[in-house]
Length: 250
Image (cartoon, rainbow, N blue to C red; front, side):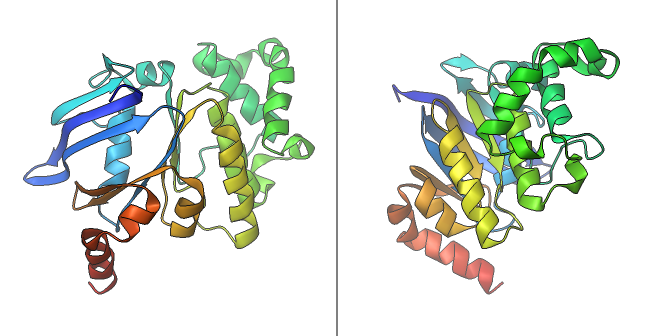
């Protein structure tokens, strides 16, 4: 597809005889918010792990802007612009929100974990860190220890640290998991805001979030794509209804 920023062709991930991801083909269109949904055990997290290189492919190919990235190390894939935010927060809880974002900016510059010894380098990134916190509505929390932030603010901080790596494709793993209605609304607004100028792929169980936010939806079941299209199209697909009802009554 001409305007696909990410193309996935025939990818397989086997664990012995079990195929967690089974012959998946997918096109992610540049600038869209694309949801990946499906029952528990459908292969969604494994699929994300394959995109980021944290798991090797058994078969198939992944291309970013036409260039093969499958088989590259995780850090190289991240440098090329695919960055993942995790379902379980990956921030440093004993440091402030500001420090967390500065650490991410330091890493983007290739200094890796030298930031532990380089306060001057961190101070030089202060302005950009504050800009990111402001963009995510966190500037008033800048000096608060990350571990003391309310849950929704922690997830927002995680997105801020991910944005510090300047991703072309932002992978969000269940960004509204465990949230109340107010926090869900806040995070949905943030995702909509940060999606401008970049592509977002998200695993999400909250179907009302998917319906209101996503341009395209791909449904996985037992490692295979069973439907792809608009939310309206996939919600009325018989295979999708059967997969969800079957999971509910299993």
